Image (spheres, rainbow, N blue to C red):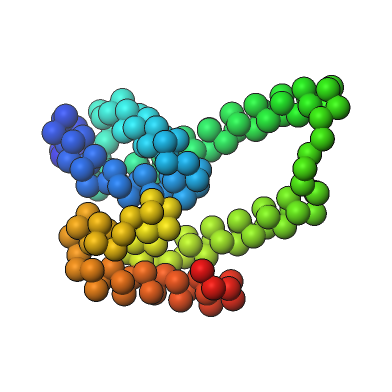
Length: 171
């Protein structure tokens, strides 16, 4: 990749290098595989549209920034949708099944868990997300990341220790 010429081949290289990591990052935020893949596709489309301003040294961080902004835009849109749905429910007298206390505690736990997972070293976090979110077996993870199964086990163990220490719960 050159500073002034971001080619289709450069885009393909970036896609091959970063797709899985960006998808895991987005999935961690949206908790929906299909939505995460859609957002990542949109991220690469936006990257292509910015091809005249891309610098080789910053393409990875640019991808994460675009992906993060796309997630934020998605959540902002969903907030508008929920607000509208809330108005419809209020007008129709709909009831919620969960207490406000439960919803608050659930949200606090999710924020705490997200913070903990974000602080796991990248290699261990990637293995953890692939196993727990994508439901991949250690052998599949090892194959995809070009690691030994033992290395995957070690990374997973490290991730679980960090989570257990911070949550105090078994996973």
